[in-house]
Length: 226
Image 1 (tube, rainbow, N blue to C red):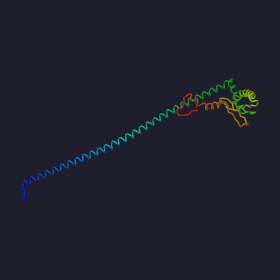
Image 2 (tube, one colour; image 1 turned 60 degrees about the vertical axis):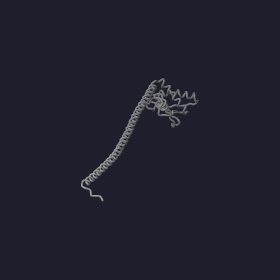
Image 3 (spheres, helix red, strand yellow; image 1 turned 90 degrees about the vertical axis):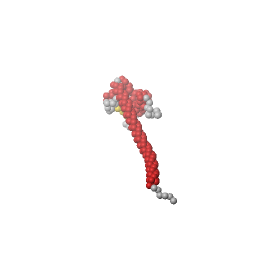
Image 4 (spheres, rainbow, N blue to C red; image 1 turned 135 degrees about the vertical axis):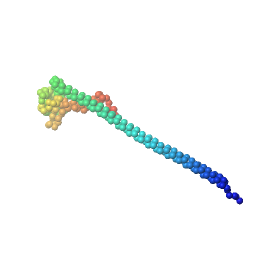
């Protein structure tokens, strides 16, 4: 039969129990601290990763925006440069055609050359119409020259075609034109425009692609040429 513990034994047992409880508390606290540190590290890494991804996404977005802005600016600059070049080329062509018209005006001022030209374009018109009677429209200041050229062209027309024709000259064209004539035939239903202005215009339209090529080289935007 066990005996009751004395006071010293009771105190010793109590001391052991307190030490055990204190040790258990320390162990539990350490486990809680370790677990808390692990969870904190995991959460911290997660937050850092999220923030890093957000920063990367923002950077990529800004980078793409910058690239798009740069492309737009480059395209705008290229278009402006191309437009200026086209405008300069067009002005050069207009200057070229304006110079050609000035030369035409000088041609009509040279009576010997001009009457030869009138004879040629009147004869051309007569051979196209093959009419027994035509009306020739001229500038008022050219009336006498055109009448003389028409008489010569009528004789050549007869030699070539074996036909005769009567030419009536009407000074109804404006003096502002470069010269030349219009021929009306077919009972006033057919008009051949052989004014120098019209001929220059037709020449511009027909020769423009070739002139562009000669002046500026081939057009890189076109794949096919005629």
